[in-house]
Amino acid sequence: MKYLFSVFILFSSLTFAENKMMPLEEYIMQFEELGSGEGLYVSYRCYGLYLTMYGLLQGAPQDGAKDILKDIELAQLDLIVWAEKFYNKLTKKEDRDFENNIMISMEPMV
Image: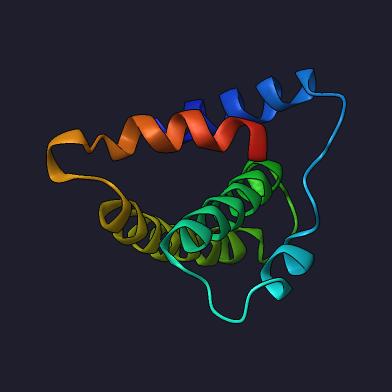
């Protein structure tokens, strides 16, 4: 399932020719403190970056690539946990659908 999701994200991102997102560092530096909305956005962007890196390294024959993939997987898990916490702060309990939200939100970011 992870592989299918990774491939979907990588190939669907090729359809977007223009990148209008500001660099993540610039975005973060705008704020003295990140609120839940900004935290959710940053965690999604970071997750998207790690998802792309994971997809690129999946078939890598180099020594150590498998270790790097394990590290990326752990980072992705941490980011998903944080993203869900931010999402839950922003969304009423009865309106929550985190899996759908992340699928819709991640595509343009990746």
